[in-house]
Length: 80
Image (cartoon, rainbow, N blue to C red):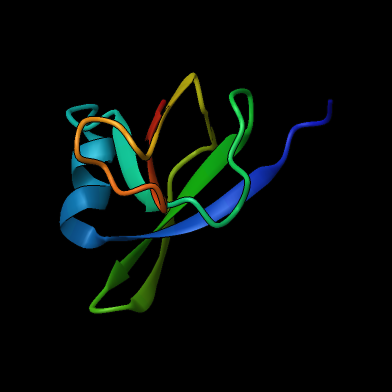
């Protein structure tokens, strides 16, 4: 199984929380077939406009799939 690398936009507030190590997860629409072991690069945006900043890639260590804990089946939570 090969790893995928996902580039994801993150609004500045949430980007900075990940950058500081406070936030270690992402709630996302599960439209990319995320898998444990995949890499995620977060790209900072402000009101949807890229700032040019991005974090070093992070490995997905756990995925909570939708359909449990009131999380819609269309979404997932990725833990880094």
